[in-house]
Image 1 (tube, one colour):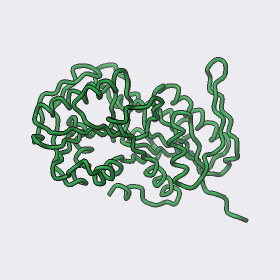
Image 2 (spheres, helix red, strand yellow):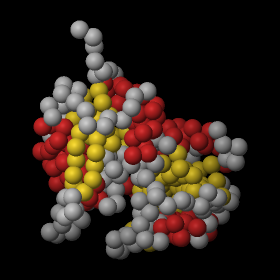
Image 3 (cartoon, one colour):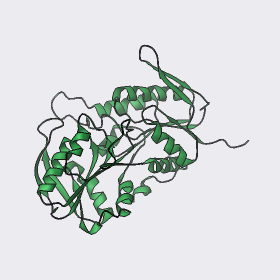
Image 4 (tube, one colour):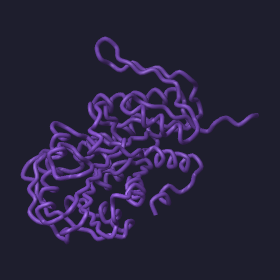
Length: 317
């Protein structure tokens, strides 16, 4: 009997461009699927080819509109399970609700755990995501979770850039919680690390108290996982400028860009912002200040390694 292909890749509607790039990198075509809405807004889904016995990979970011994209993903998982797929791995480049990973105050929900329960109950057998806001979210699942890291994409960009002298660079963590992420980037670039001392009096608000480390006459690279309203990013960059940095660059994995985020960045002292395509951007960003780097290669390589039962963590050593 001829051996059939071991896996198939399908895409939800939230980030078809990234799914196409992943499939192109792997040398396969996206699976046939029809996604629409009934008159009342319910998801209308039809799988256009057999998946019986195949390892299925579904690419779907649970970004804005979060609940729409999450529900679509759950329905896709259920459809593939009922179509007798051998396994169902969900590729979630941006994991929505990740910031609600604990009870910050009394009677708060832990929504990140609820989403994990929903995905598992629907029938997902593996989760592949990138730069979870909190790495402990992996423990919310009773199935394998591969939390990929975006720093190799930024390292490749910085090392091949003529505009950046690594001898004058310092990586800045925007808060204590992001120190591990920022330190990893600093170590790979061979540059020092600085830390912002910040507190949040309310949601989407930040007060910069101090900077631990030397940024004077340096090129400061602010490295974070998410840019949401960019209020915190703007205040951080203004504080770094005040402390004597000659140039400020920001890079982040997930460009949520809520409310006036783009305007906040345009009016900040940041000279360049590097983001990835975990979240698809319908609007065109000003090219003089923004550059989008694709993480399709990382996801494609991770999927290949999962299919062939090879190590995924070796990609980030």
